Length: 241
Length: 326
Ligand SMILES: Nc1ncnc2c1ncn2[C@@H]1O[C@H](COP(=O)(O)OP(=O)(O)O)[C@@H](O)[C@H]1O
Ligand SMILES: [Mg+2]
Image (tube, rainbow over the protein chains, first blue to last red):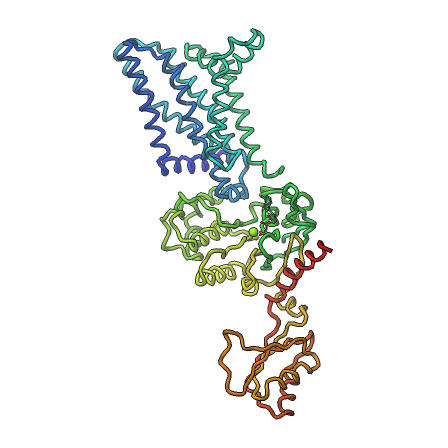
């Protein structure tokens, strides 16, 4: 068990280092801060209402749609392209350790991006009186949602040696999950409630209301578990072809 | 010890190797020689556990490479074809990364890194990103990462491809040095490489093993390729027919190729290929003496491994092609 953790952490550190060495991290963090900041400011001053619900419920999920697959697309695809995957999987490490290590690195980057946006609600708390429960729940929900997206992105990165294809495939899967609860009106109610449960947005709305319900948390954890499992399978795919 | 038993590997409908079996005893340096596409890399990928065979089995020290995958991977050091490396890591950082994953205690890291740096001559590039290194240095980093845990078994897939002649000599020396205490498989399509470094050669062609032996025994087994170059002063056509008439001479050709030294007046040079088991030197000398010509030069060349290799691979291809058309 300790070696599993140690190896996972070794991979995490390596990936974090290469995020920050390659400027990917800086570009992504800056862009993220800039875009969220812009939406935040325009909400605050133009409409003149300090409403975080929009930022949590609509804007950041939308940004994540592009942002998350951009973080993950390189993680496995690049190793397949350059052949380093062969060195990696012939080391005495488990495929799970490789996947978890890479996943954790991407999660840390995402959490850092979210943490940096704390400045905005802080401004609101000076100007007005934000809903603290909603704030905590909103951040928690966004982190969970981002974590699920990252698992999806990591999986699609394992499908191909081509980063662009990894990005697009990841984007499409996330987009479908994102859109589900926005198109349920056209379905009969029995199907609609299933679709709603499967959609990402529905659970995020619950959390953003400040209600941390174990069913919502479970939903995200199942998504994460499923796609990380699939990501491990992509590493093993060399064995069944 | 590496035991490879009846390996067959299909990529879709392409059969890359078929029924390949061999054993490499502990301590042997074995050259795995074959033209491009022969199936060398495929075989190595199976031995190192990167992928399973379609059929067959690999045992490393009697452990099944699939069932005891982690244990087997611990015993092996592997330099894959084309030396894939993380270009954004520096040399020391990368060697440390590999040591962590190999479970080497932290306290040994700097000692082992230093040993590899010394052995592989990486002193000048310690802090450089691997992506900035020349091909030769990259190759050494590849060898260093394969050796850092002092494995019992070392597998190098085409370690000198793309290097200049000086670098090739250096890497070969390094391999010889390293191979002394290890079981080593060296894959290559370049023949002098195995002649220079290996105890044993396995020649593969089109996914099958076509020869197995020491470089010397392979040479001896090959037939009819001993070559005798003679320079004789005398009437050229008479000399030629006399040489052709010698018992044991398989083929006679003029020896004045482009790179030959200029001939003296009235002299001619011939290359005589002998049939197997015949050494023509004495008979040629006696013949020249009897005819009262003058022997200016005689040079005997034993069968070269190149010829064995060509015979086994190109010859087999030609036969296969002939077989498929008829
Ligand atoms: N991933 C692959 N997919 C399909 N065919 C492959 C693959 N890898 C190798 N081959 C085929 O298998 C044969 C053996 O290849 P390889 O083992 O790379 O030979 P070598 O290393 O001796 O040059 C070749 O015909 C090659 O085209
Ligand atoms: Mg090869």
